[in-house]
Amino acid sequence: RAKLFRGKKVHGEYDIRLEQADFTDINLVAQADGSCIVDMQVIRNGTRVVRSIKPDFVVVRQNPFNMAENEDYRNIVIGFQYGGLLSLNSLESIYNFCDKPWVFAQLVNIYKTLGAEKFPLIEQTFYPNHKEMLSLPTFPVVVKIGHAHAGMGKVKVENHYDFQDIASVVALANTYATAEPFIDSKYDIRIQKIGSNYKAYMRTSISGNWKTNTGSAMLEQIAMTDRYKLWVDKCSEIFGGLDICAVNAVHGKDGKDYIIEVMDCTMPLIGEHQAEDRELITAMVVGKMNQMQRPPSQAAPPDKALQGQPLRGPQGQLQKASQGQPPVGLQSQPPIGPQGQLPRRPMGQPMIGPQGQPLKGSHGQPPIGPQGQPASQGQPLRRPPEQQVQTQPPINSQPPPPQRPHPHLNKSQSLTNAFNISESSFFRSNPNQDEAKAETIRRLRKSFASLFSD
Image 1: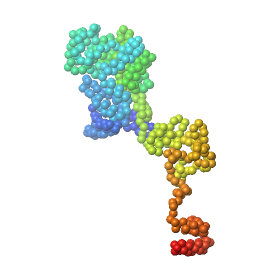
Image 2 (image 1 turned 30 degrees about the vertical axis):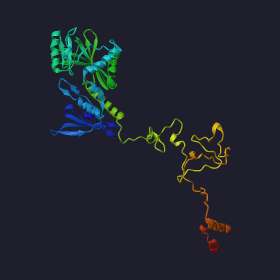
Image 3 (image 1 turned 135 degrees about the vertical axis):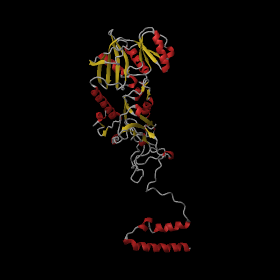
Image 4 (image 1 turned 45 degrees about the vertical axis):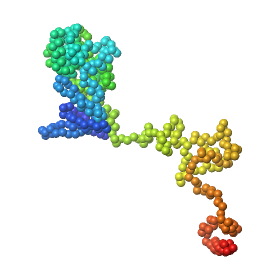
C-alpha cells in the first residue's frame, strides 16, 4: 500500500509517510491535549522491534471487534478518538459498527422512512440473551450469534428443537443473538460506494452451500441501477456519514430482494477492479488531509490576521463595533500630539462630539456659558469641573495667582519696574548689550543697599 501514496503531497509541499500494522501489533498513549503516540511492533532483520510514531491520519481496514476470533480492539479506537486523530471513515462510525444489531437498528429507521417497496429490509428478531429464545412462529430461520464476520456464527435452524439447542449455545457465549427468516437465494448482491464511485456485484454459489460467502462462488459485476444507488446512498448517511460503505442483499428465488446488512470501511475489496478501488481510497485520504489538516507553517494572511479578534479599549475592556461605525473604544478619544499631549482646539471652532457633530445644548440650542449667556464662537466652551477632561497641563499655561509678598520685596519689585527690566532680560546673550546689563546691575545694587540701610 505504501506505493499508492508515493509522490502524493499534502498542501503541495508535505510528503505522506505510510505505516501499516494490525491491531494486534500496535498500542498507544493518548493525552488530553490532543497528542497520540502509537507504539508499533515491526520486524527489522528478522527481529521484532518497537517503533514510536505520532500519526496524523488513520485509515481503518480491519474489524476492531470480532467475537469469533476473540479480538476486541475497541480500546485502540477509543485511543485514536481521544488523541483527536482524523480517520476514514470517522472514528465514531467505526466504533458504532462494532455491534451489528446496533447497525441494523439504523437500517430499521431507513425502512420506516422509505417503506418496504423502496428499501426491502429483511425481518429480524433481536435477543439480548438466551433467556428469551423460546420459539419462533416460522421455520427455517438463520440465527446469528454475537458479532462475527465472513459467515462465522451463523446457523440455519429447521425447527424449534434445533432452535432450543442453539439457545443453549448462546448461553455459553454469553452474548446477544438475532434470528431472521431463511431466504432460498438465487444470488447475492453487493453494492459498494467509495466516495462518489459506485459498483454493483452479483455472487452465485457453486458449491451449493446456502452461505454464498462460504465455499466456491462465481462473482461478476452487474449494472448499477437507481434502486441500488438509493440503498447505498441512504445507508451512507448513518452515523454522521460514511465515506466507504457497502450494502449486502439477497435475491431470492421468489424474485424479491432482501437487504441483509451494511458494511463500513472495513469491507473487503472484491472483483476485478480492486486496484482502482485502492486508488479511489488513496485519493479520498489525500483529499481529506488537504481539507482538514492545516500545516503550522501556513499562517493567516496579514489582512485576515485580526479578523474575529475583539477590540479592546484603553482600559482593556472589550469593545463592540456596530456595522458602519468606528469602535466604541476609539470614538471619543482625541488625537495625541507628538509630545504626548492633547492638541488645543483653535479659537472660533466649535467643540466636536464623539460622532463628529458640534456640541449643542438641549433642543438644538448653542452651548450656555458660565454666566448664563450663550457662548460666542470666539470663546471656548467651558465644561463643569466634574466633566472636564484631565490632561497634562500645556507648556504655556498661565502661572498661579501671586501670593502676598513681603513688604520689602514690594520695594524691590517697584524699583525693577521703574528701570523697565524684564526677568528674561538677564538671560539674553546679546554681546552688544553686555555693558548696559553691567551698568544696570550696578544701579540695582546701589538701590538695594540704600533700601536695606534705612
